[in-house]
Image (cartoon, rainbow, N blue to C red; front, side):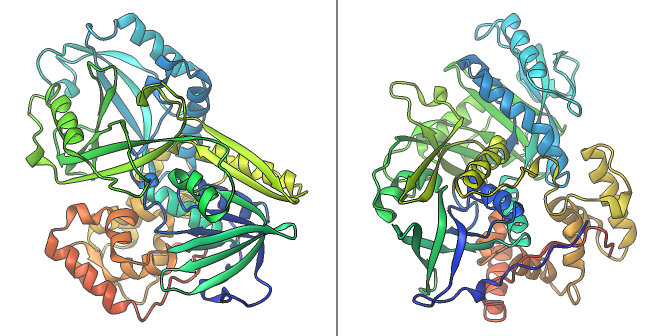
Length: 538
């Protein structure tokens, strides 16, 4: 793979009032859609600046159920088009990042009083056949009295169904799209708010403000509003434009409890309210349970947290299915996100479409693309559609390219030869990494393999791995995340780039925070992420 030239350093952005800072496209919003669009555009040769008021994936995009899935329950609402589109993306994304994605087998215990078996079989038949499937096995009926997945459940569950989807680390998926965008020439600015934007002289004139107060003036030929839950607010307040579309803000919350089962399957339970509940194996020692669908009152940044009603709902319905009750005292961590759904007046929250809508406007010759809705699974398709429309509006003829492209760290060929199956390839890569570095602890290398893939070469190139700041946390990893993955604060590392915050106790988290503060002056802002030559073996 050819190494691309390094992008401009963040420090190279001129301050407010200086001349000459311009780009083809300004993308506002550093969630999965914004980072995906920036990556696609940069790969087509356009100059791109992406700004995000907080950290990348700080809000909705790190608060998902961590699934790349078709959305089995959407079939019941007649959304065949959305399910087909999402199903087609599962294996595309699985191949693009084998270190970040893994096949996950779901078990759905059958409760005859809720949905008859024939209805579930019909739904699973559609799920298996709406899109081409090469890597994921088909659905099947199972006997929970004999299957390992039956052991943790209440005895009333005798039969069930199994089907396949894909698990991912949502926050890392966002960051890797940003890393790839930067490696292809984009400028990625997190903790940088777009304070004001207006169309002047056929271009979008923007003022950006960094967290330290520095301001930057920018002129862009086109503007992308990918602000997610803030999309309407951005138009009204920063752009002084009337929002043309309504958004429905729905809060989804999850809880993390000590592991409820030892096998590698996940569960989908049918609730009496016609909703479903996921229970997923998470970070080795934990079980992730979600999600809720609650109308969010107030602005998208106000009180986005699990409330008492949601906690009771998740614990109650998990306890209704597992033999071991789930109590509020068991919850080690919770997270919530606001989903910006297309407004459908009168529809219950769980029935509102998760599809996306792209709307193009032109103001005095300058295109504005608004991104409404969307879901993690279809982000690449959304970005491809958005980039195609923007290229057409700007008079640029550049083909789509992301379908067969790997995300950073996803090319293991230098370590294992030609790829076979993504899950098997990751295991082979991890084994090769362990063999190449027998001097390092195996659990440390296993974690690095899954988080960074072949980009672990960058981490291992650090001048010494340094001391162990906290259990399993070496200085080299912290330096890598600061320099190559836009980490600006300790919480960016503990809760998004990694999930070490869940594994570490309060004293260990405080040690990471102290290290970060002590070294902040040494690395004032992350260096430009660069593409690792994937053919290099350290």
